[in-house]
Image (cartoon, rainbow, N blue to C red; front, side, top):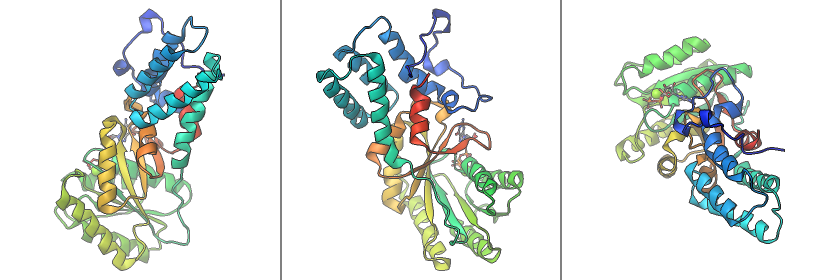
Length: 326
Ligand SMILES: Nc1nc2c(ncn2[C@@H]2O[C@H](COP(=O)(O)OP(=O)(O)OP(=O)(O)O)[C@@H](O)[C@H]2O)c(=O)[nH]1
Ligand SMILES: [Mg+2]
């Protein structure tokens, strides 16, 4: 049976912001330690000595869920469900509460668990990567290149961030690390032209997966959102279905603010999937529940560290278990 983590002794009692994740421990629970502590340990303290569940217990749980950025909507849904069970006397123990909580969390997240399936008949399968500045786009592309190569697919990268001087070199570094070609032009070039070149080159070399980087931009910068729309239009001249995936990279640390960013990217250019990064560095990992409730988009991957293997396909059951199980 799972619990909400062990009670902290006074000497271990540190605030969630001071907790370092252990980068050598690659278990998901360890990577989600900050969110886990925020959700679990505060309740573990509260549960101590309690024999039964009452409305105060649910109030405490509600506060913890909101603090982890689960969001008002998903939190109310969870608490209402638990309250109904409590009224029916179906929550007689802490274990029963924990089980009901994990079941409800899974129910919220499960519809978003939709892996990015590369259609082998579509060559190259084009992934256009977008997002606000510093969200983790280029790093995630490096990790994705590794991920698809491990599946035996040939990968090519296109350096569509021509805005930031060091962006091309950063992508090239990931290219050489993975031993995959990177199509690039000089800084200041038209990103649509670079990505067009990349697609043409990937087509002629019969590459399986082309991943295109783009410059970071705010969802409110309409000229830059138009630039993304242009990239899509130009690609469609070579392949009417390209890009096959428009992947928004979201930094989990933005919490609730990330929702509005995603909504506006979706309204401007149409997204087909999300990757939520930096879950290892934040206590706001509950944002996935808010994403699931507010945005009707697949969560393809989660980023849980800076290493090449630290972008993982999103699995709802594993995620909930990593948050709640001992
Ligand atoms: N801890 C942690 N760091 C991450 C993760 N993903 C990315 N980062 C770090 O976030 C920082 C920014 O990553 P980039 O990949 O350069 O972000 P970007 O979106 O390409 O940034 P711009 O191109 O400037 O818009 C880097 O230091 C990455 O190592 C993650 O899942 N966990
Ligand atoms: Mg970048």
